Length: 108
Image (cartoon, rainbow, N blue to C red; front, top):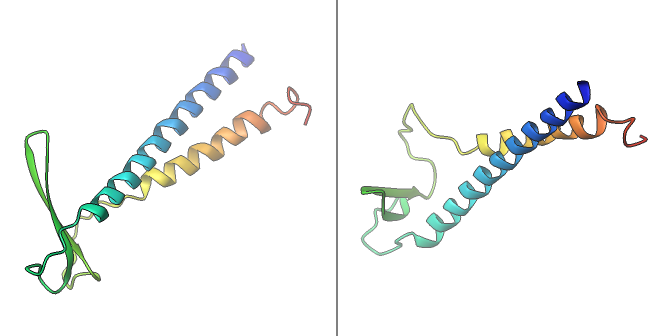
C-alpha cells in the first residue's frame, strides 16, 4: 500500500511541477512579446519606454512600460514571481519524492 501512495505522490508532484513550469514559461513568453511589441513612437510621454494596445477574449487592454519605477506605485500589483517560485518548490519536492524517499529502490 505504501508503494502505491508513493507512486501517486510522485505523479501528483510531477504534474504540479509540469503545470507550474508551463505557467512560468508562458509568463516569460508573454513579457518577451510585450517587450518586442511596444510602440516606441515620438508621441509617447517622456517617462514611458513604450505602450501597447492588445485585445483578448473581447477585452481591450492598454499597457504602458515605464523607463524607471513611477512616482506613484499602486497598492495592488500583480507580481509574476509565483510561477517561478512554485516551479522551484515543486521541483525540490519532486527531488525528495524521487531520490530521498525511494533511495533504497535506486540503491543510493
